[in-house]
Image 1 (cartoon, rainbow, N blue to C red):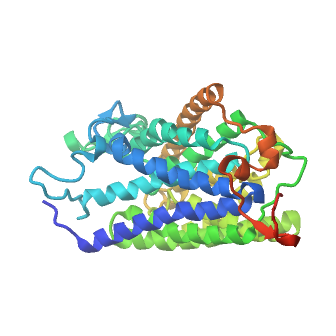
Image 2: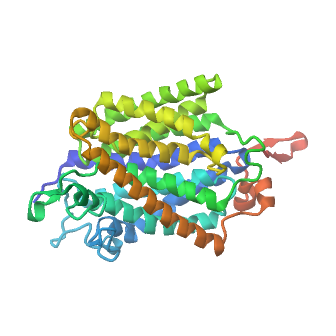
Image 3: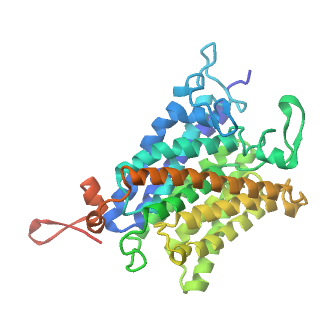
Length: 440
């Protein structure tokens, strides 16, 4: 029996708290990027994600992610429904995982990942989506898209190193019996596929299904408060140390490596984004710096435990350049990804996942590991794109044809905050003591 490790437990409790903080941080980040008439709604979409996913995760989310395998695609939702059998052993003692951490702490940690993943999608839907539809989508999408993908990658399913997984089908297995595993296991340290590719492709699909904001491409839709954007980026960076460092599942060298790699990759991405902006536009902007922070964080997420600090510089720098270029694709192709979820999370998530095949210190191509790891990383990225894209497309169309996605044109022009929530983010005192709502 593994004994309780109070140090590792404290680390994981702190990490879970840091990851939970990321979603309010995302609310600041997204809230500052929209116009004044939409900031409260944008923040509410993040807080709504916390409310819905936290409830769902306890009921069936953990079981679908880590319960008894069903065809390599998802865990049985009734296996540990309501966390039955996930907290205590038969003697009534807390279940302890292999790192000496109570299993219930792991439940909390993983719940925060599900929460932030759904919240990320909201950035593509700014200004125009019914709040009720968003809340219903959150419950459905996290159930049929996030939980299955989490099981496939982290729960021993089709995209893991399982002997029955995709990697084993391509390059065979090693070991025998219960110890048989894929010869070349996929690497996703903290969620390149499960979180960022998943959210990024969902954002793209929904942006296409729901359609453009009124005036998109014809009138300016600039961020209303860059101070909030910078604050949100800072909170995301801070919380990401729990996201990546906590994915070591104990306070050890891998946690330290993930911490350093998270710092260096993010810093390099900021530089890469700002240099790209300067060369292309003539200015290095605060919005670019904040966006570069997120691009670097996204890219290093799957690779934080497998690349060196020098390798993390390459991961981050390339991510900054790629995402800085990719955010303009929405104007070229005509999809309204309002706050660049596709350009940042999908693009940098794909790059970070594939970059492992080049830069992993043990199996990467640049370190003499051959091409196998690269092939596996490309395959799991493609499967994640296809799975999330198809599932989101079906959900999006069903909701569009039933309860509908869009608020009325009148409400969109007048402001979704006042129309949907009955509130305005900013008020200024006008002459005569009356209050005038700020519309922008």
